[in-house]
Image (tube, rainbow, N blue to C red; front, side, top):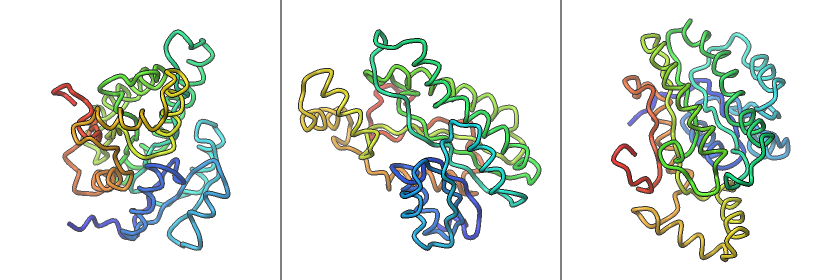
Length: 257
């Protein structure tokens, strides 16, 4: 299937690792132009590595300065789609959280996504086309142990995206969420480490346990996740909006997963 992404411009957050990196690399392979945003300049330079299809912005997406840098880089160009993605809040159980943790989680998971979306949407509506794809978590369908901040805040994003998709459904702009389960990313490694600390269980044993929780009995690969993301970023997905799709190897047990 031809995705027809050649020379289209996309914005990708968290572009130097995990899902963001896999999506960026596949977009470039399809001939797209990518504005890659991440916090670490050295990793951005490595990602770009002389590739004229990749533009880079060193920024923390949760900061107001990141939005201004993105809008300046974008200028008057037409943005085909954006991958709204960054790292999540720290792992911890409910009773370990403080109100300051909740304030920080709102800023890191919710607030900047609303600000960026509402800055990009008018431009997309004006051109009559756009694809916004939010990378959240399987916790949008089923809570993940010791990740209460993520469990709660990502549901806020889900409610926002669903509501906005209904309000602008006829505009040619679609908004969808991908909820990854257990994939081989740094975020997952951090979760293994935290659970190992809390439970006193070796990380390798936890990897096996997490794998066994899925129907396919294995941890996912970011590149496989990215292939679905690219389809949702393409014109083929025009009849799908406001959806939260879990990519989890059968982790979610509910029929609505």
